[in-house]
Length: 560
Image (tube, rainbow, N blue to C red; front, side, top):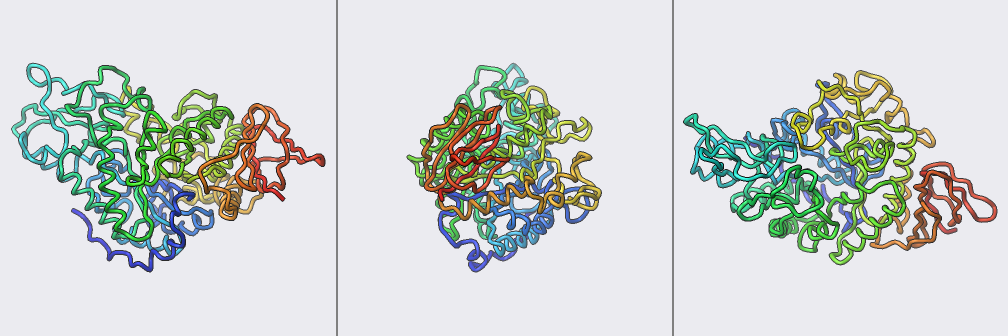
């Protein structure tokens, strides 16, 4: 089933991106959602060749690495997070030769490539699972997943009370080869995504082999999907409550953030460290506290973990400062860098989140105040890029794209949308293909439309419309990343020096650099900390050494 791999990337191909060690500690990493980035063949779906053609844009934007969401062979029940073959590229995206060319071109442009890895579950079309069903009860293949007899007189009830993140029970009953109702299998997400049993040694062996396959292809790292999953509590005990999705991130669950996951990652780190090129692991780990997140990035485990606590923090100076302090304090003892992120493929874009009142969560169905949201988003980006550690950008945020909140029901494809009592199911809004040009059937995305409809005004937010335009969001990002790369005090280190500031204003120093952010609704007067390097809005500096900082504005200063 797997496609033939291209030859392993030669050491010279990695040399162009290996100019300094520990690059990931202050890297800016750009997430590409392949189906929505660029379409090379006009079928309405983005692909690897499309990504490859746009790599110079990412180089010129100023990012250090590109993280690609899944492009593996998949029935696409959950946009590729249901993997049928981890060593093959889905034909909708291309083939392994396209992946090889993309990796090599990226390295030639001094960009690193991080690929998604999905170890918590496979597709129900994975060969292991198909054979497990075909062979029936007692099949050794069933031991690689969580198959259980049901409860009740005839096994008609699920084995326990766990609920799917996408809504409904986390168990599906199978029809056995003889046509009778049979065992149940666990799927914390869609029924098409059966969970692996990581207590079985074959599962660990297989994933270490998969790591080597892609490392030999030349990738620079892996983003680990549901890194907090994998290991389940012994005996799969009942949770004893309903609306379990509401508990996520607040409690250690019997199916999430179990201590046994760390044994898996210590074994993976041994594999990764055999390869040259300073390659990395990044965890998507939803945990109750930032302190538990830090467990994933101990020196012998993973390198980074997404900071979802920061992503979920309201646009409020006191809350942001508290989150920054807790993050830095948690990461410092394990020697790992903090990470900062505002948007990704699973949450409402921050230009729309910040356009709405606080407290609505990370999936929002209303457009809100567009002007307010964009102003806050620009300020939040400069604040994030000034903090010590690594920052993640989601494709299109550099254009100030809002979420598309008015997609017709008939075009939606998020599996959670079609299941009750789970996630809100409105992730499609942040996945609409991005605009490259003012005109065209899909604003430069491709020649044949787009798999999700784009708003009629998308062209005025395009790369073409914003390039070279002073004050545009795209030029703000380009300038910010250029300044960040030039200023040694930006990104590096593990602490900030907070400065006295008016209520609603954050101010901190890092060497000769100072960042001030006004999260309040009114302009604030602050000290002018030297020369303005960059600002998200208009800042007025007076002759007496003070500055008028407008509402929802961030300014970067450098001592003269």
